Amino acid sequence: MAIAVFLISNISYVYPDTPFSSSLPGGLFYIRTLVDFSGLLILFYNGTDGGN
Image (cartoon, rainbow, N blue to C red; front, side):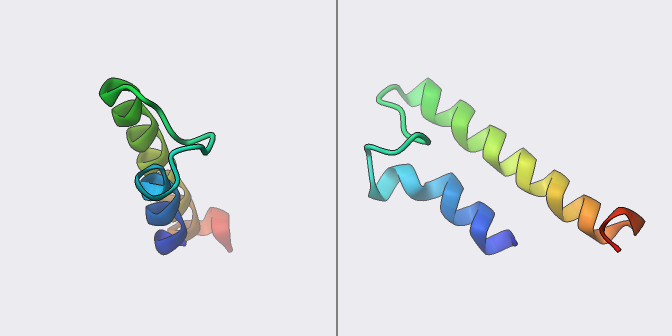
């Protein structure tokens, strides 16, 4: 799961024409931050009783 989040977070550096890409540095920061925090929430949820 962590590898998938890392790859999605950094995919815009490899493929610039994806939905996770931005031409502005600020947009790139927001996209990466949102994906990284979402990944942390997923990992946290799977580590608690919610993930069974």
